[in-house]
Length: 126
View 1 (cartoon, rainbow, N blue to C red):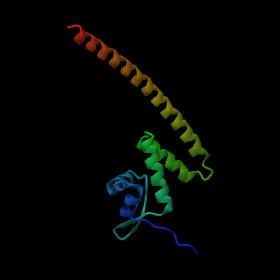
View 2 (spheres, rainbow, N blue to C red; view 1 turned 135 degrees about the vertical axis):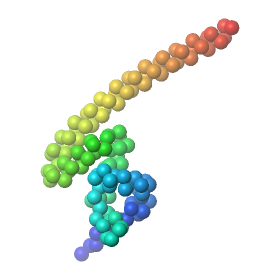
View 3 (cartoon, rainbow, N blue to C red; view 1 turned 45 degrees about the vertical axis):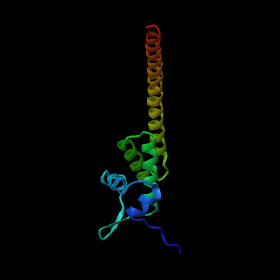
View 4 (cartoon, rainbow, N blue to C red; view 1 turned 120 degrees about the horizontal axis):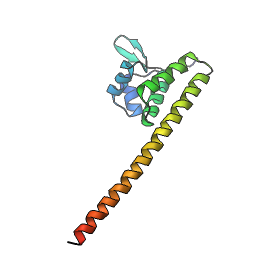
């Protein structure tokens, strides 16, 4: 019989290269729900996996509400179809947002280059 691997906040913090405060923050937002042994939070493999999902989703720019919805669907739908459909919708929306931001950034870069060139030309003709 294999023994389940358990983690404490400091262990997860070190392993995942995040602060203990980050872990407690996600717990306060009900994104992870560790067990307790006295005052010590105990995380199992599922908690660790949820934390990895949270970290990846945050890195990709998803809001905590989006992440919570995704994780909540994961818990209630064993087939994960609802979760997958929700994730697909959220990813599509995020891609659209990023494409819009990319267009704005490219336009801003173009305008700044033009302004830079105008200023350089002005300085060279003085």
